[in-house]
Amino acid sequence: MLDKRQFYIDGAWTAPIAGTEMDVIDPSTEEVCAAITLGGQADTDAAVAAAKAALPGWMHCAPDTRLAAVKRILALYKDHAEELAQAMSLEMGAPIDLARSSQYGAGEFHIRNFIRAYEQVEFDAPLGNHAPDTRIIREAVGVCALITPWNWPMNQITLKVIPALLAGCTMVLKPSEIAPLSAHIWVEIMHQADLPPGVFNMVHGDGPGVGTQLSGHKDVDMVSFTGSTRAGIAISKNAAETLKRVHLELGGKGANIIFADADEKAVKRGVLHCFQNTGQSCNAPTRMLVERSIYDQTVEQAAKIATTTQVGAARDPGRHIGPLVSAAQFDKVQGLIETGIKEGARLVAGGLGRPEGVNRGYFVRPTVFADVTPDMTIAQEEIFGPVLSIMPFDSEDDAITIANDTPYGLTNYVQSTDGARRNRMARHLRSGMVEMNGKSRGAGAPFGGMKQSGNGREGGIWGIEDFLEVKAVSGWDVEAS
Image (cartoon, rainbow, N blue to C red):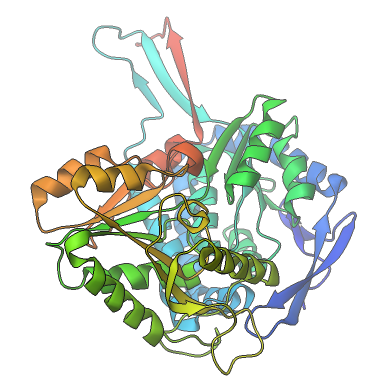
């Protein structure tokens, strides 16, 4: 259990001023593994006030000072690798091997890439040779509220905290109340990194409470939120009252387009990617669009892969998927599987209920539907579980139409050995990212979407620039500078 000093405000661990206690549940066992206190308005106000007081000093210190702080954070992050992996495995159900590799590794990857990208940021530069006395200055947005989800805890915390620090912003982090344990280790890392008091603050809370208080706070200049589209809309409306900047990373309904000339590993790669992290990823390729000439064999192959996918407790080693994060998520996924059946999709693997022999924990059966049509609920709604929908297409134009027929626009995928075709598809797919033939985006590439998948970009130089304002100064004294 965590002690009473659960918040981090103005450079010190503090006890909540007011709030209500909430249990943290181990999704593998459905047992309580910790308890946290959700903050109230007084806690939010104290954290924002600390960040506001620290802003001038941090904002105007030398960029090298901020870079040195982030390098200290990276070293400390690596020192706490096993603690972070164990915490994420316990709190949100990531199998321990996945927690040690991808869940922990995502954070280290992003910190390293931000350090590299920081060299490209011009904080102070002339407009150009045609206007030597016009100066372009980039400076911190100000006090930032950073609201992060439970599905990739360190991935999202590092994608927000590190660029905000490098930009010169001060901040209040509200981690997910469902998976808060790794955030406590992160706060200890930040404390050990010896940042000036008030630069980084953390308060526990839920969306309707601390989340709403932060997004509407008059002294918060920017909100960066990752989570559901529904919550993103609510945050945008609340933030509009104070005209603060809002950065949103929201849901997705990625299409994985498999042409007849795709490589032999394309189907397996797509199914396993859909099921990774128990399907709890916004960029999961949950719609598999298959060229009609290879449709039947692809459905058969996908069903076989799903049937042989192992499900197990998060603490167990091995290549299996773990539980969903919570009872609410379990119920949601079960409801959407039932809807898929009722609406006429052909169930070829998995289905309702827990895997055979399992009677406890939020475990679900890896599920594949075939003959899905674009108007079905499971083809339109983000399920956030290990559920794959397969549908046929007849041509490139047909595939593009089906892929783009969604309110989301985060990540799409293309599998083809025809390079010209891949390039055509990439240009016509309406999404912030397109990954082809299993090739991951390069280090420092931006992450983000369009339409109801959000706005802004995270990662690399784009992630830092999201936390910067641009100031144009005329009449600059070139000699004095």
